[in-house]
Image: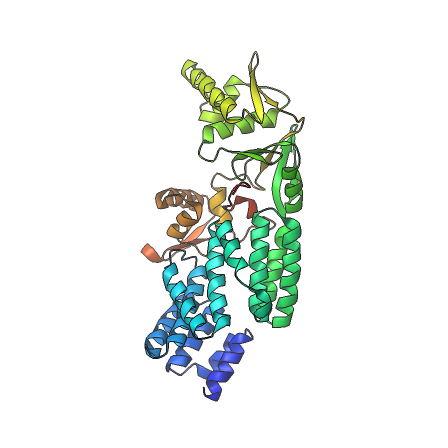
Length: 406
């Protein structure tokens, strides 16, 4: 390796892409192309970075498997940052195997972390935790130890384990200081802000209060009957009833919980559940049917009693009833939760992360764009959507996560 290439590599490792480019900006040999691609990625020009890395991989050829594998890993990182979640996993796995086979354990570990971060993004936390368990951060350089702890903190936040998240962030901060890379330290500080930002609203007895993540954890660990409007489930003392695929039942459960200990008139329930301003006989019949289904769904947690003017919730073995709502009520809050990370997303990536169809995502994006809440750039398959982060808005509770029984 010549002096300019070695110097550029050291500059990139220290988080100085401009210093790297000053040494190799005019060179087109394979090592220089790879380093230029990495530098452009650090500077945010992801499209140019991808082109350079692919040129480098071709230039290295089959006689340099390790160098080509490193280019593949770098391209996979670009795909993750640009939210191209459909990027082929098998290609990254093949590159990781090649790096491990040739003794490049640091870059092999980096490849594993990319795969784990993708799993966290799409809510497959169990798989992510199992993959992390196979990695020993003590044997890794400080930059990768920082990444390890950031992933651990992200999983802990999704699991609502704020104590574990704080511990992981403390370790991440120490590792980032040791690495001496400003971008890593900034990422740790950004992740730490989630713990102190508003995470949800507690609605009960006609009033509401903003909660932080630790307070949400306390609420869910209590014996209260909780209608979780962030996850669309009903909870009490560890028992969970999912109503994700039953929006009418969830609307009824939320309306009854918000009014508790009072009842809710039938006309009001018809409006909440079916969106009708007029409660005619057909809607009243349909309401009785759906109330029966709600009773069956919640039979272990609560009953639903008929009153003269409507229906009333009757929680079992608790006198605390509350609704846990998102910090901002928004029709397409789950889409905004992803876009609020400040990255650009494609409709296919959002559909994969939300486990829904691209057409459903596109309709939500069109509505948000009409309201001026998101913006797009590019055309066709290159079209991406993004929005600036909402100040003081924690998205953790809106992102996909398995139920506690997972």
